[in-house]
Amino acid sequence: MFSNTHRPDWSDYLMTRKAFAIALITAATAVGMVACSSETTGENVPGGPITTVADAPVRPFDSSGLIAQVQRRNVTAIVETVRARGGNDDDVLAALIAGKAETEWLSGGSNGTPGDLQDIYGWWFRYNLAVDSTDAVVAATHSFMDVAATVTGNENDPVAYSLAVQHADPRRYDEKYHFPREGHTPEAAYVEALPIAQAALAELANQ
Image 1 (cartoon, rainbow, N blue to C red):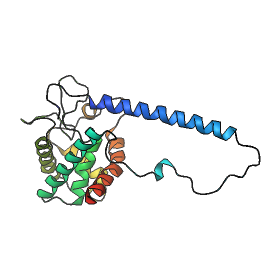
Image 2: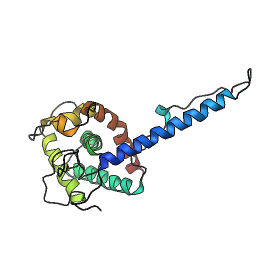
Image 3: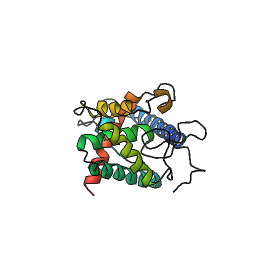
Image 4: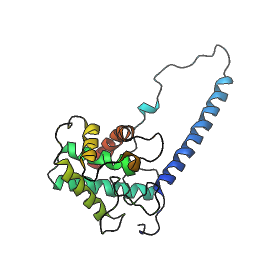
């Protein structure tokens, strides 16, 4: 695993992957346009369902084998810790949503502030543990569950419940600290994290 003193900047890495994906999509679109222009007039186009991005199955973990391995380990630790605390399915999903939205399930990353590392739920890292260890994920999840015990309502809305737990934390949730990049909001990130968290749970259940 990675040491405390030399860790890759996960946010930069993930942004690089997104830029690469955009380049691939652009190239694929160009190829499709060329193919369409080469068709002869009046040629029959077969009918049938068109697969869209929404139809594609959700991949909960990163395409990089090493990162995916760490994410699976951390997701497993979150689920097991919440269950051990007596948490229900709503608690499990809320914790997974928060971890995905805040840090991509990678403990010990940075929000861009030099020397400032975050736990898996996006809070300033305060534990006397290796930042990227399973123990660090367990400790942070215990903190999440401590706060969740004080939150009532919203259980039927996993995104609202997850955000409510974060905002109820006595450390005071600062959106500019958790999502410093302009245009990025907790609400949007947590909504996006919901189907990914559900897919991760389903994948673990099938193993």
